[in-house]
Structures are given as structure tokens and as C-alpha cells.
Amino acid sequence: MNKQEAELLSREIEILMNERARMLRVVGAAAVLVANTDASTLPVALVDAADQLSEALNSLPEETLRDALESVRAEVE
Image 1 (cartoon, rainbow, N blue to C red):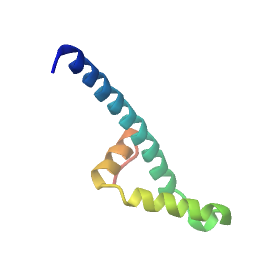
Image 2: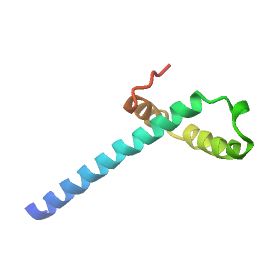
Image 3: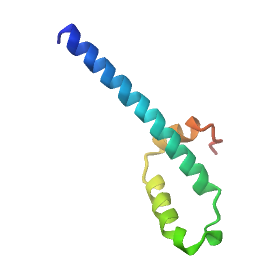
């Protein structure tokens, strides 16, 4: 691998790491929202979306979810 290829790869990795950090903040905020939402108080039109979000969050690996919660400084029990 030449120097130019190494620099390009390094930039791509940096882009991916920044994107991961942004995605973790989104997931962390969504997890906090779901954890603090009482489904019985949601309008009927939002229940399906909330359920889908909850299922998506629950399907994440525990370490990823923990990283996401830490990225928004949520307390992890």
C-alpha cells in the first residue's frame, strides 16, 4: 500500500468513526425516549412507530446500546 492509499484509507476510517459517533447519539437519545415513555399515553397513531423503535433498540448488541447510552450521558442501570 502506498502513502496515498494509506491516507485515503485513514480519511475513510475517520469518516466512518465520526458517523458511528453521530449514530450512537441518535440511538442513545431514542433509547432514553423509549425508556421514559408510557405507551398507554401515546396517541394511537404513534404506538406502531414506538413499538418498531423499541424492537429495533432491543435487537442491538448490549455493548452497542451501552455505548449509545453513554454517548448521551444516560445513566445505565
